[in-house]
Amino acid sequence: MSKLQGKVAIVTGASKGIGAAIAKALAAEGAAVAVNYASSKAGADKVVAAIIEAGGKAVAVGGDVSKPTEAKNIVDAAVAAFGRLDILVNNSGVYAFSPIEAISEEQFHAMFNVNVLGMLLVTQAAVAHLGEGGAIINIGSGVTSLTPPMSAIYTGTKGAVDAITGVLSRELGARKIRVNSINPGIVETEGTHSAGFAGSDFEKALVEQTPLGRPGQPLDIAKVAVFLASDDSGWVTGEKIIVGGGLR
Image (cartoon, rainbow, N blue to C red; front, side, top):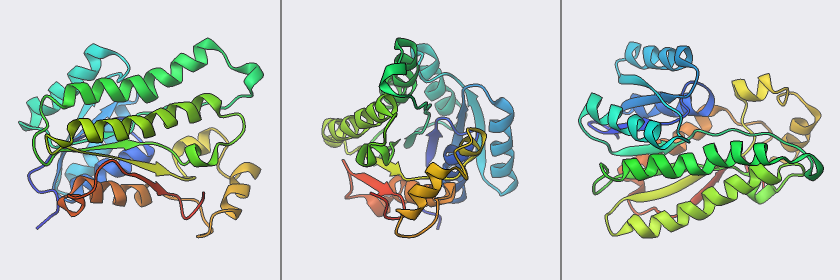
């Protein structure tokens, strides 16, 4: 029997990259998945089509996680479509890198609003529907241990994700809801290619420091998300799992 048969999941920011891979992997294990997108409806529809073609269940749900009404609507739409909610994957995120001299208030709020406030708003809406055995998976980043130069704001947001994961694991533990985070290392996605990061000297330097000697692929992260969403991790909460080929 599939590990997530009968479960319902929301994956935010799932129109491409890591989010899309997680949505497909959860669906492959039997979960019905609400595929959230902020701007790329075409991308989300493509993910949904792939899931349905493979015999799974999915719907595309638009919404900006950083806006309270839209965050709640994402959750409400998933529950309306599938009747319940068991798994939330907070994957939506944005990033930019700049030296301390170039940091702006606008850049700060743009990243914190999506990466931190958005995670809190969707989680706030979701906990009204999550019951015993529910799982919340936050997508952090390996930058919190690497602390690379010119990433003060982005690393700050992911440090907040780490801390909030710990807080919510304690806060929601009595309700038997587990909260964990996955902190990916360098992962090759559409975003890293469009940003010019893939193949760059910086990426090559990180790969050289990675014991397993390669950049990650979205499926590497998705497999761990399936574990954290399933009963296989029923005694795991409050953990920050680095999935980065050994890069520290």
